[in-house]
Image (cartoon, rainbow, N blue to C red):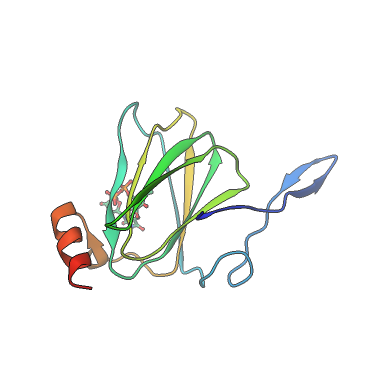
Amino acid sequence: MNTKNHNVMGDERGKLVAIESGIHIPFEIKRVFYIYGTQPNVPRGQHSHYKTKQYLIAVNGSCKVTLDNGQSKETYKLNQPYIGLFQDAMVWGTMYDFSADCVLMVLADLCYNEADYIRNYEDFIRIKCNE
Ligand code: T46
């Protein structure tokens, strides 16, 4: 299971979830990005990274994520702002079934580098077979 339910803090004013490198997620955070406004029935992601590790949280709305390590696939529903999903390097990730209000926040351990992407699934499987 790659998902984690984070501790929800807060008080009568509202809720708060805190995520710290090395305590709640297994890497130092170098980059944060988020995707939103995804059109209906449009998947995002559909790639793997050579080195980048990611941690995904639907801070609003919901989506599904399928992680594929080249041998098996598992699908996760992210529908609470306290649920986090770890996506390791060399794992193919597909995000889909976005609600119209979904904001998917991603924490990553490396800065953006297009050269770290594997965007072709056949290439991904070939590289996995040679690992
Ligand atoms: C992921 C899903 C959830 C940047 O300039 N910097 C960045 O940090 C990122 C992530 C992207 N970009 C540029 C590269 C493209 O020109 O933004 C454009 C869209 O990126 P991409 O086609 O990779 O977008 P998605 O939504 O398919 O995938 C992104 C992340 O790449 C991916 O790692 O997990 O969001």
